Length: 318
Image (cartoon, rainbow, N blue to C red; front, side):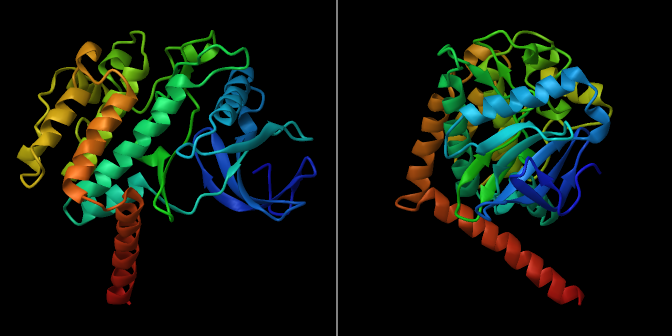
C-alpha cells in the first residue's frame, strides 16, 4: 500500500484508513487538512502507476465525473497526481449502503426488494443517466455519456434516502473522441447490453438495458443472466427468454411487465429511447402505487429494515 494512515497528499488531504481494494485501485477514508471535512480518495494501485493507458483512463474518469454536477452522481472535488506521482481522485464521502448490499440481504431472506424501493432507485438512476446524456465537455460539445459499467455495486443509497451513481472508470463519451471507446473495456459480464456483447457501437440506450437488468433482479430476488462461465452469461443476454416480472413476483403490478419488457428489449430501437422517458414511466407507477409517499421515505425505510435485520441477527447469534 503506497498510501498509509497519516500520509498527506499535496498538503491538502490526510489519509485516515483503507476502505476497500479492488483489481485496479484502492479507496481511502481521508480528511481535508484545512477544513477537517471528511472525503474519500480513490487511487490506482501502486503497481499500475507505470501503465500510461490506465493512468490516462483514471485521469479521464476524474475529469469526466468532475464535470457531472448533479445530486444523483457522486461528486468529485479534486484530482491529479501527488508528490510521489500517485494518481488520486477526491470524492464526497457517502453514508449508507450500496444497492448491491440491499439486494444481497433481500436474497438471503429469499425475496426481492419492495416494489416502491425499486421504483425509487430506478427513477433517481434515470435522472443521473439523463444528466450524463446532456452533459457537455470543456469545448461545449455534448458528451453523450454512456456509463457502460452499471451494476448494483456502483449504485449507492444514502442515509437521507437519495441515490448516487458511482464509478465512471470505463464510461464512453460518444460526443467527443476519447480512448475510452476501446472495445476491450466492457462492463461486468452479466450486466452487458446485447450490443456490448456483440462489440457493436453503443449509445445511452445500452445503459437503459443494464438498468432494466438491475431493476428486474432487485424485484425478483435473483440474478437474471448471471452464469459461469462468462460466455454463458453472454449467450443468455442474447437469446434467453426473459420471464415477465409478474411470473416471478405475482404480487407485482402488471404495469411493471410493460416497463421492464421495454427496457430489456434486445433491439435498442424498441427500448426507451432516453433515460428521461424511462424515468417518467417509473415515476407514473410510483405515484399510482404510493400516492403522496416520497421516494426518500421509502429508501430510508429500506435502509432501516436492513439495519434492523442486521442488529436482530447479531442478537440472535450472540
